[in-house]
Length: 465
Image 1 (cartoon, one colour):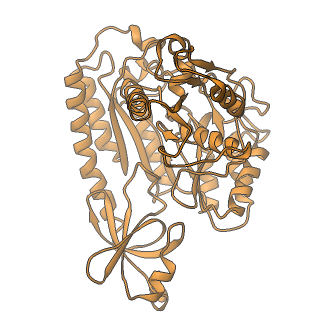
Image 2 (cartoon, rainbow, N blue to C red):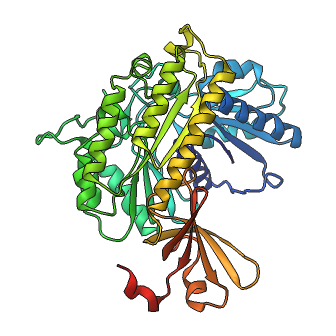
Image 3 (cartoon, rainbow, N blue to C red):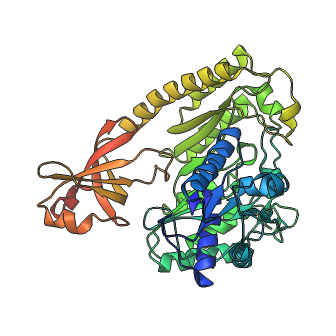
């Protein structure tokens, strides 16, 4: 499996692998040993599409005689085109009903030659495809749990509704049961994902309604049910649309520290006119107010956002508004990307396009500002103690060894990390510090976007507070 794209696509890849294993296929990370190679593609923006196609072309060049399947969002989005115009792929498999992968694989196995037409399978986007996963692509004891599929926000720049359809949600009980199963497997960090968690339970086909009898959101109901589970774990919420942020979830987090005070809220712009052009209802002022409200309730909150430059009509003044917005909300982390003109989206036809060079320059300015903001915010965490989930070990020089891990305010893959120092002859440290384990450390200093720290021995636990 050659994995591309977001965490939601990663979950799809894990489902495909797990289903195939259950149906008698053997999984290998070694492409040389594989009979069939699956490229799980991304089709969100132009650069991601190019990356996925390049992966296909390079794989075909390296393995001209192997069977190769293009799966994922790119396959779903362009299946009709690829059927007659992508000879490099033996098969194109969409992201609708993932559990049909085994019968699709049989058709690929029986395909005698690449001269035959590319086999395609695109199924209806219905419900949220789930499975008892046995294979995870995260570091040990960390995983993603998808609670929604599709999106009904219809931001004017976004192709997700085209690729994955309208919003659908999983029932609360089903999500909680999956989390129970994962906890039994030893998973410590569970990251709840969906295109927009704030919309959980609001889809047209969802059996649950947006509001409960007491007026609370379905997301808060889900978190309250998760909170009833016993044990030590992290629950992280990823991707919450700012226009309908569920303020009642703040109480859930206040009551249960296992539900992390970490929010990924993609504001995209700090200019009200651009925000509205993106088919969003918020404003620069309302977004600033939201951040203030969150921080007033949860002072230690970690905030990540995404900003876009080069959206059609983004004048110098509009960009400066976004720059000022970033400096005002001072997120712990942010990502920035240039607008990608995607067919089948409303913005595709917008006028007043911005040159790619200007868009890139603006993104670089925002990234530079964010680096300074991140450093400042990380310094506030120095000389404090944290639980850190270890991801990997590094054999240092001389007598010192290192481990890489993350604290609660660092999401997988996108944020910085903790670098944990310990002595090679420290038996307690060597025994405790292993991938998938949670260890106790003291933050020592900031190093770029990372924090250097050192392992706290049992004899030092009395200084925890």
